[in-house]
Amino acid sequence: MKTYGTYITEESVPGIPAPAGQRTTINAALRNLRISDLLTFIGINLRFITENIMNALIFFNILQPLDQNQRYDIHTPSIPDMCGETVMVIVFTIAYLFHTSARLKNTVTDIPMYLYDRGVTRHLEDGLQRSKRFFFTTITGFGLYFFSRYFFSPILEVIFIENTTITSFALNILNDIIKLCSPLIFVYVYCQYLAAHKAVALMLYIFFIIRNLFATNVLGFITEYDLHVGAPFLDVLSPMIVFYSLSYSIARIELVSDTCFSLDVDPVVVEYS
Image (cartoon, rainbow, N blue to C red):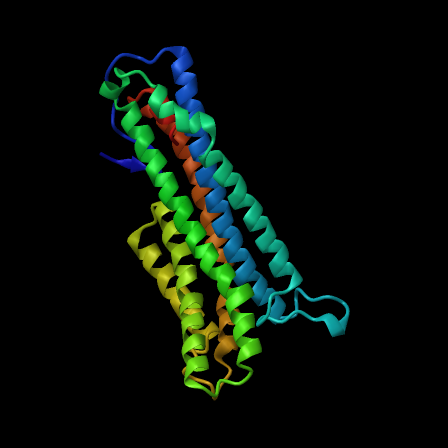
């Protein structure tokens, strides 16, 4: 069985056609799932824009205020960072509202039993679990990122101005590990949503591992050289990730249009796209 994107399958669904009213209810629930997943995916791309692309723009003085006394720094949160992250929180909140909508939660239990023979309920439940996994995995990555950037890092800087103790060194290493791992969570969900080819997924993982090793000065073990400057140079490549997302979205829209006419499936299943 072939899979097209997140929900479309090349599996026919035999059985008794669903009444028009039930079909509308099912499609509305699937539409909420689709919107929730799309908003989660948009939030991930906003994360790449905020943390990577803006980082390069600030470092190369492209995105800087006119007042020289209020210049942005890549090592500390800036106004563009905060604005981007505020938008991310709003997008994730809306995605959560769609995911937990009453219509979506009640649809599975309201479908008559004979629809189990047609596989619609199974597809809907699978989509529900997949969407839940995407969303909460993304929120975990965002929570780690937010915690490190706005709480853990400032606290370490205030308490341990100089890394002179074993405790401070260990805590800084822990913070760097969080910085290294949280983007990989976003990459995982990104690749799962796009059903990315293994080669593409491997390239993304390698890119973010190398990029964040520079950003953390190789997890704090190299202090003689400022390796942080390597991250902005790699961030110049980040727009390619957003371009890949746009290309996929356009291709998927065309695929959904073709699938509606080429696959021998019930229209309810096509609505999973």
